[in-house]
Each structure stands twice: as C-alpha cells, then as structure tokens.
Length: 177
Ligand code: ZN
Image 1 (cartoon, rainbow, N blue to C red):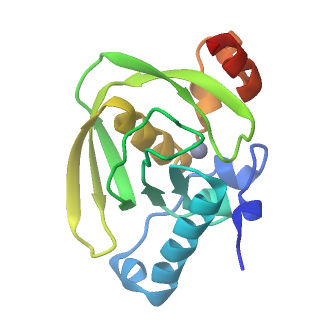
Image 2 (image 1 turned 60 degrees about the horizontal axis):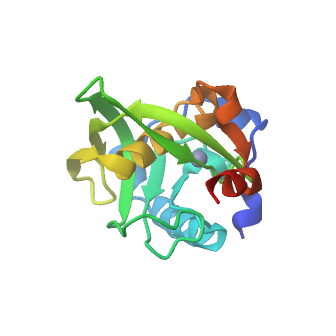
C-alpha cells in the first residue's frame, strides 16, 4: 500500500517526465477511483495542499488540490473545495505576477519565492467526466499552476528567479520573525 513515504523526491526522473493524459475510459475505471482515494490519503498524511500523480510514480495527468485553513505547512490560507483534475490546461488572463513562498512534498524542507501570473483560467475534466473551467486568482491560482507544472515535468525550484530566495524552511522562519 502506498503511503506518504512513497512520495518521489527531486532527482527522481519520473518527476521530469511529461505525464500522459487520461482517456475517458480510464477516468471512469475503478483503478482510477482507488488511485484518487489513495492520493487524498497520502496528501493528508503528508500535510500537503496538493498532490500530482507523478509524485507517487504515476506519470499520468491527474492532480488533486485542497487548501485547508488548519494546514501547518501553510498557516495563512483559507479552506477551498476539493478539486480533482484530469488533463488540465491553463490560460493566462494577465501578465501581472504575484509572488508566493512555495513548498513541495517532493522537495522536503525547502521553500522558494516564485512569481507566477496572478489570474488564470484552468480547463480540466473532473472525476465525473465533466468539463470544468475555473477562473482563479490569489494563492489558489499559484497552487493550480504548481500542480499542473508537475504534470509537465516542472518543479517550483525551476521557477525561483532569485536563487537567494530558495531556502530551508527553518531559515525562512528565522527571517520572518
Ligand atoms: Zn509540488
């Protein structure tokens, strides 16, 4: 049984692959339903707010997101609905960027300051094969971009423009205090 110890870490080549899209048949399958359940469990155990299938060695275009105001890793956030997305794509609605300190279960212990477009539109299929189009802004827009990056072989550390702003969590806490 997969657990949070099975989350791949930076350096594993699967994290650098472009993941395969799902067919409708695959989305509907029992195997996928149990994969989604497993992913929620692993994300929960790890205290994350998002998880992409490649992070547990499955190079397929599936990611889940749920912001939780009781998160210890991200104390300032508001609770969001649960999102399950297959085969997502992003449209950028503005050139304006917003910066956030991002972390990643595949890059334990580190945080990096990443600037990303502040308003996006995301298209995907959910677990009921319904097309969704969400207009997002704020931290949720960042989280969606972070998770979708995982499906295309990218990690947030690639997007830290100022490498002095890539640091260990403890050091960031020291700076903030
Ligand atoms: Zn991540």
